[in-house]
Length: 531
Image 1 (cartoon, rainbow, N blue to C red):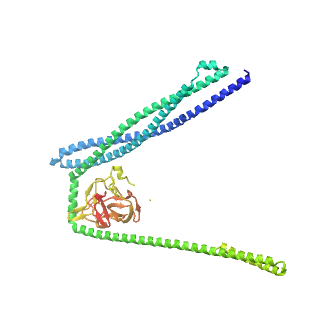
Image 2: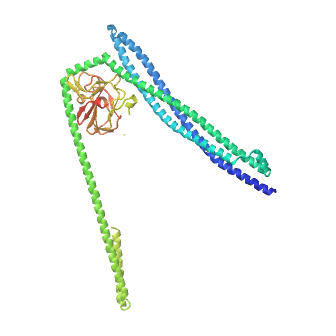
Image 3: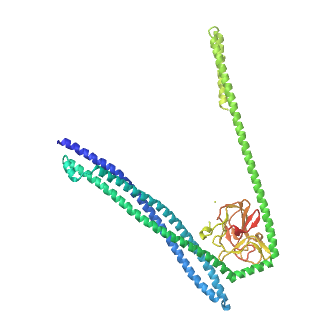
């Protein structure tokens, strides 16, 4: 065999090797892509793990705080129990009750923080579990398909038969032919080993992720049980707080003082209420008139706009009709001119002088026609209730986030009718007053200088001191009274939760609290049915 033929065969073998490698590179591409995707997934997993770790630390910190407060409560409970029947220790007993009230309120806030964080964690883990289930299902499908593809290859190799090294040595036409065949067999074997290794790696990864998924599901159930336990503790603490308020001599004393003050100024209080209600009714009628006038103006504006559009449409049609008529007239004139020119041309041989005159007139006529044609063509917050575990039950939300004790409700009280709820807890002064729902501020009263507890009415704001009213539409109003200062302004459009002012003790108020009312068409309803 000549060197030329040997060289040609070597080139052919090299071409075959390149072809096989090209085909095999198509199989390796998904592996590279999968590795890149795996890297991205690893980054995402690292981020999620970091977030989960931070959430877990926050939950543990909150639980430690709750445990610390519960231990403190146990000590105070014992102190209260040891002193409650001892007259000589009454002062000590009341001091312990007041301290316990503050401790229980702090415990409630710590529980609410823990509940919020735990709820966030549960939501995140549930979403992660759902994603992992899809990923694992995809990986399972990839493994099954990979095994099926490899089984087909093995079957094809079995049917086609495979050459042994002995067959290659015996069947080779020369040394170069033998080297090329050996290289091809080696490359194919390496590719098969790579496929097997990839399948094994996918299988191991699948089993690892499946084990992690099971562990996550177990942890999720544990977290859900923990959340339920926290919510039960939260409810128990709220009940305990109500009980402590009833046992607190300061609260009972406050009730007694309020009653005595009211009875001493009952006539003045009732007179203020009647005057206030009259003003409210007047305000309601004014607002209704404003709404009616606005509706009329909008209707008038709509009608004017409709009339304007109609007039524009008629004008457009008229202009189009005039333009059409002018165009028709211009066309008629042009046709007439052309007819005259044709007639003149027919008389030209026998009457040359007349033709010349007509020709001159025709030119003038054309100029006039052109002129006619030209004429035609120019013719703007506070911590939310959700942060405290509050569940909204209507279109309105609680107006003083973080403070949920109602010291007085709606109903008859000492001969007069109380038309709202009084929200009070120790430390409420300066708390943010928030809009119960979106609406427009229609009344703001500020300027009461009597921001302190008093057993009489200073007369400011009809007894409500500094207050504001929001119109929520559909006849719904809410009122917020006894504020330190109202920061909202008349005409302001507010959203639910926007800050309106801060809690104070202006007007007829024996201590800092928020008086909150819900009204429908001017009639006071029980806010407890809505918040």
